[in-house]
Length: 82
Length: 104
Image: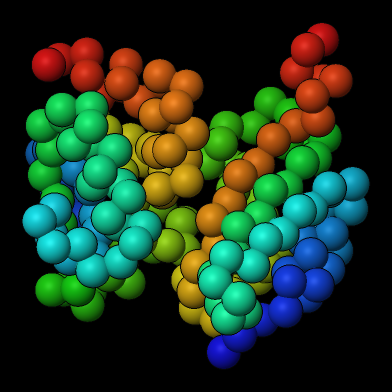
């Protein structure tokens, strides 16, 4: 069941309000996406926790309805350089 | 502890480096699993794989074990490291080499 990129972005922002979300549709089929999510709330979290926060925002759709989501997370660069 | 959970726990604790994946290292059945294998091969890591497609209990159980919704999943010395995206980031930064290559 394909899912629109705008819906993915909406769900992520609903639970991580300051998130900057960039989504690429990798195959043009609405089923294989790459997302980059940047948020201050990730500061101090391990990569696993950062990804889990995004998976949790997507409410169990990853691995099911949303088959393939390549994920990259980061804190804003002005924070990492401090 | 459920059967699946104790089975997974035993696998994770008894293998220094273990990748839960779809298919085998020679014949991965999914692009993400294929990428994970390629990274470990590139690092020359000595690793075991578990094909979750051969065991429905493990396939479901591993997601609960790590609270992680996707496969592949890499475990090193009993610790969950991440899926293929995290493996790629750690490969590029050199962290994964340190983690899996130290004993080689």
